[in-house]
Image (cartoon, rainbow, N blue to C red):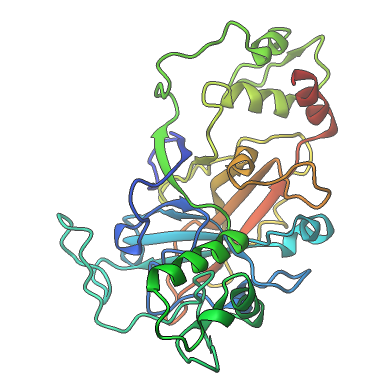
Length: 365
């Protein structure tokens, strides 16, 4: 994904990866362990602890979003971390998400300048040791075998029990394939499932044949005129907020989309706007603070839709399950570069569906 000179929206879809989503390929993905753009300097647990339960958050989404300006943003990745405990979000959702921007110039110690062979690595410096579970900085080590690294006490305990390290620790004869099988089983308990994010521009026909004869959305919205990009709404029989109707109308051709990317080139004077899911809970100018490093405004870059929850194996019937209408990510418009700061915090805003919108969705089921 890259900034666009126009208002074209790129849509993201979650698909099972055909090959490992490793850092050398600059992936955009959901869940799993982070594929670090800067393998020498990676985030540590204290930087991504939930402000409610104090446990390390896990990767929700990472997007590779290279840009031409400034030169330091030739390689650019946005990381979104999330607390897996939905109860924390209900207490203080602002403390249950973290967003970071990482970027590198074209000439760097880690990745080849040969664009015809992007899979080749030129790492000159030693990569940081990673937590065996989540991929954060492995600043701690098993005191018995001195072979396994962890980001935190929480993940060391998890690996000792569900990862069965208490069995494999200091046992040289254990098969590496068995150990990795247990590691993956432990990661599955802790992390979100991993999917590759594939993109296409809004307006392209992703599904050549779509069955719309019995589409309940069309039946309901036929009583409400909601033209995309128009400010005229005729709402006679359907009692829902206008933003929600516009949202449903806009995403209806692509019901499986999980993400909408709409960042404009930094020279543009027109800032992109998200596709709101409700007329309420919109951020104010005070909610989206300027970049603390360069003082410039943060602008909307992309949004994560609630359809992603279907891929995260979230049990919606549980009282403490994750839930959102959309997650909006705002980043520094000018991609400011700060020497020796490898991860710059950006802003995430959560917007929920209104009660009217939720009731209408239930009526469609």
